[in-house]
Image (cartoon, rainbow, N blue to C red; front, top):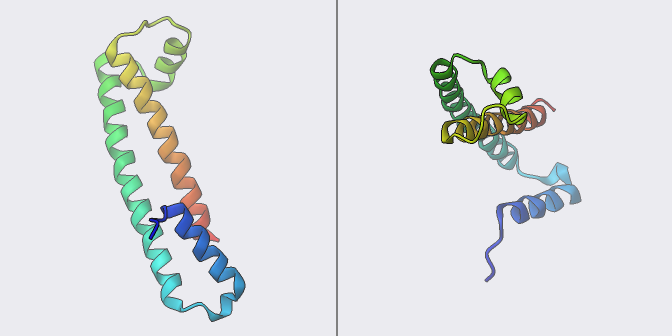
Length: 109
């Protein structure tokens, strides 16, 4: 038997629910809510760790991340490994915030 990806499983469940949502066991609804809450919690913890890393960079270089990004993207700061990590951390934090927004919008619906 072929192993399905998570996305394939979600799509199959979506098709199942779309056929007759009134016949869907309430346990499925509860399970999905719990999974979304769990993912939101995981992302919030990751967001906090990334924010701590940004604070450390900001303290070390006496510069906020917004100013750093402007200067880094203009090439003013060079390619020091710390700067590459700082830029990556800023990008990861933005991605986490976007993912949280999607999950929270879905859970508010």
